[in-house]
Length: 344
Image 1 (cartoon, one colour):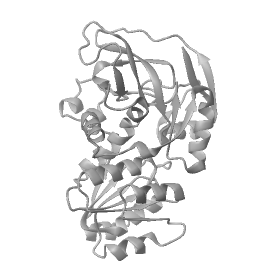
Image 2 (cartoon, one colour; image 1 turned 135 degrees about the vertical axis):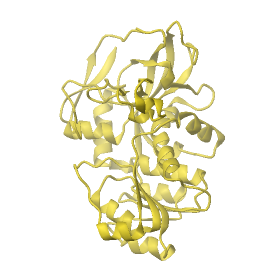
Image 3 (cartoon, rainbow, N blue to C red; image 1 turned 180 degrees about the vertical axis):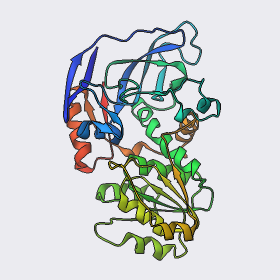
Image 4 (cartoon, rainbow, N blue to C red; image 1 turned 90 degrees about the horizontal axis):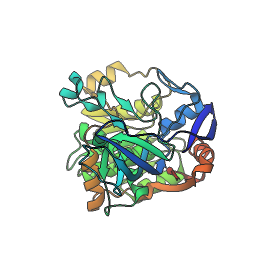
């Protein structure tokens, strides 16, 4: 099968690799049709690591995908051959104490697509997944939108964990796919007013058109003042989706006393900090978001019902042969890109 491998920093090459085979009775062979380019993939592309997860070249990245079921194991009941599916890239063990606590996203033995030390990615023609990771979307949405389900589940999980409810106010820092997913999920949860910050004009425009009552560029204006003018008492929830110290600081400042700060973005640095007095005096609750947990079916229902519209995020499409171009585009934030996908 054809696959794209990361062979060095900023070097992606097409290789011919063996087609994977079903080994277990609950395995499913999926022909991959669409792969999303995620910010975490770009971290591996530009730095070869995220935290302690370091790439050993050559390595296949990619974890957001959809496809068509081509073969199933003897005990598979969730899907059948020919089904169109969205893929949850996480495969948990179901045995450790985290899984038994219902925390599959922090499974001690988690295998996640495109994560060094856990599993190769989906930038290839075929993958084998446990049936629990597959969700049938036949007749519900096209495969391009199905590939966006995985990043949307993270925004949905973040909003859920932060307890956003009807009538709340929320500030979101960063309007990439993750921040916009949080915005769409917060809107679906009933947030009354959503504020968003972003440096890229096309993303600011998208945020204003699809849910934010206000959006500002921190390079051009004082976003604290901009949000505080509308919310002088502070917002209920802040979702940090840029992975920057500056946005964490801004989030703390715009929160009301007793507010909740959810850190959703992945920082490229090893440590972030808080102004202790501010966080203490405001009694801010800090949440860290680790991917998502049990949000796949809810995300599919929200999308198919029309309560969560995510198609506006899909801005660029590339064939497999131009995967490197897609990564360069996303890494440089060129051409108004929000979400780029690879079509096989």
